[in-house]
Length: 572
Ligand code: SAH
Image 1 (cartoon, rainbow, N blue to C red):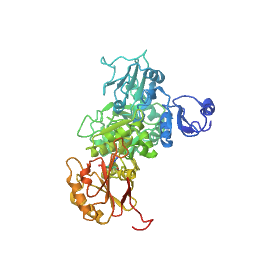
Image 2: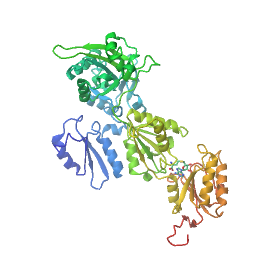
Image 3: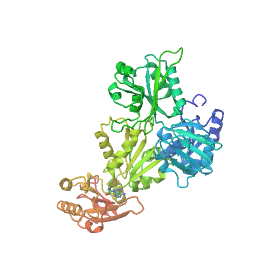
Image 4: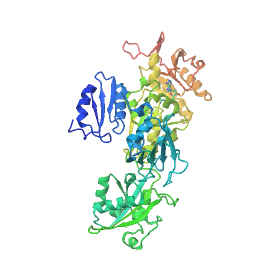
């Protein structure tokens, strides 16, 4: 264990909790650096988050393991009791860096439900929408303001700052902590062969002089001539900063405070550091204020060290997450959680964001963990839902898009992939995984026996996206070929004609006594099942929550069961 302790982010033990405690006791150091420790009991009923629940993410790991095993996660942290993700966790999905402060004291104040003020000046406010209702956090959004907290700030017993500043006004004697969203882009110009140490020192000095936090740096920007500058590459690698390089053409027209004719002659753009910083921070020609410069060009030299460095800092409207996003396209099955695959459940629990139609989001509520961003959109806005999911995934978040049944059968998965392909997606980033679910025709069939034992097909009667002549041709072909047929989206309050026409088409090829099952809201509390016939089913009340199963010429009814013979016993 000693050898492995710092090499892994987490450990899952299948061992008595007492033995685990003795094993790890000599290795425990600091909750900021210790790995997650999770213990599973031998029968696999409970998954205990034993140590490093928050910063080490053991709570999260325990929930994922529990989801996979079908076990109960055991979380004992106070944030869990409050349905709150924890002061030291709120910025994790967005790649924020934890800055200075007394994290234990501020977490304690939240745990005691004391009023704690949050002053957010930078970064996404998305996390705020998911605070528990009875949260004692009082959030003040103050984008762009600097300096004093201002008179409107509610007093609290502790303060959480969310800012790119290194040292916002101290609120002592009350404890405070600082989260740094990574919004700063550092533009660099340097002579060939400038030492890494000088570049790093120049950036640190510029940040210190102007009170910007090194933790808020998203990356470094420069002109493409410098893409192979060894010192620059070394600093970026050491610090985990991305390097963005722009051509002189891209930098040329960007307005800057200190252009230089000398630089223009040498490089082909009057500014490197300032223009590159603004460019990386999202400067758009149509908005001259976009990607604003916070610090104009500063020149650094040091006696005895080769080279010179110019540094400028600009700020992006959205923080850099430093993560590559993922889309999980999840089928949640017909309704009951027990009908969803463990993999689908785990994908929902693991996601930073869950997006879906409100009704389905409600069905998966028990899987949602504190701090998850839930975006429920009305049923008509499928495209908006898909585009939102893609936007968040491009930003670096893991997004679960949920559909009932199977996500790839009249669900959201197809739309998301179509939108991605239109945007010229490279097939890799964001990564995509499709999680299958039990589709309506399977759950409906299971409730009435085995009507799908022979060749079958699904036809949606919705003519919103498919022209009626196409639907009609498919109905005719299926009826003629003697497929068992599942009709999806069979009938709405205003759209009744297609179902009547479907009946007429099937009556041309099958007997009026052919068994038909109407399964409404399968595996949901209001499930209803009606067994009827092809001749009579129109009168039985079919709506958009119903799947209509029409038997083939051999399907027969035995009591409350529908059976389609496959031929094992002869006679097909
Ligand atoms: N992706 C879903 C289908 C969405 S289309 C799936 O694979 O199941 C919506 C249609 O599916 C509804 O109009 C209804 O015909 C059917 N449906 C979805 N859930 C159902 C359920 N629980 N019971 C019966 N039919 C259902």
